[in-house]
View 1 (cartoon, rainbow, N blue to C red):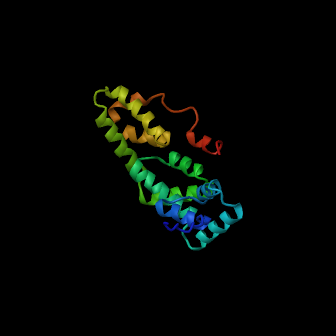
View 2: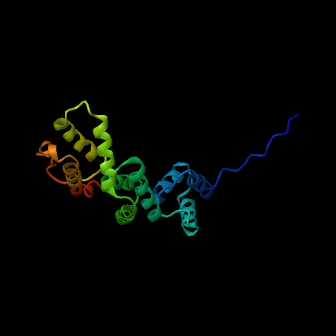
Length: 182
């Protein structure tokens, strides 16, 4: 008769959190939510999170800066979309702003915007420039760049068609609404 292996106990909240952190970076709120969803008791979850903080495996400030830098450099996102992403991951406003500021010390948002704009411009050569520029403006706004920055950079890159941007300013800046949705 074959021998049966002894049943292994389910992983603790700490073990499960370490496994998740080994795969990718998480905010404290994300990790808390995931552990509770896996059925761990709130007390066990908080103890695991506190231990991870003490051991420096979990740090929202570092997470926010790494997240912002990565999204700017590799995904071409502006600070408004990054702010939204961090807030969705449960990072508080102060930590979010500090993380974005830290990332902006290493990554120039204008250079990211210029690179995206030039690539878009090359990929849409079939569209006449007077129609391409407003579409590019909208594309860059959806990527999370502020309207003022987009307008300044596009006017600088393609001054010949700057009048194609007239009337495209939103009624209210998107940054004014960022705090209202939180």
